[in-house]
Image 1: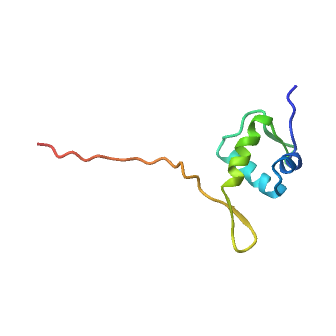
Image 2 (image 1 turned 30 degrees about the horizontal axis):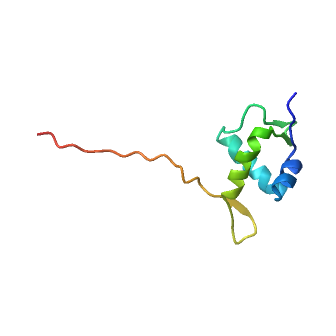
Image 3 (image 1 turned 180 degrees about the vertical axis):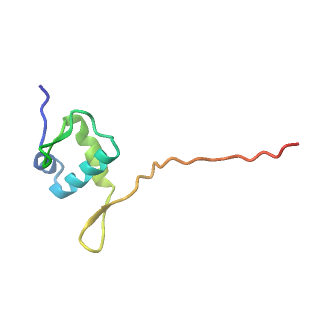
Length: 90
């Protein structure tokens, strides 16, 4: 059986606020980047697989504090870019 962590456990490991961990989890869940072993249990608490902790840590690094005291997650710099080439028919 796989060991799973709670939000508080991950916040303690990463030495950060549990609200930042929760926001990172919600963001990764919306993007469907979490493994199947990490899931929301009973609509309130997360069960986090050990292999997702590094992805959560990377997402927390992208969090930028705003001036209102709230945190907002920045868009990832690895956004897909489409380049089109126009060729003149001759």
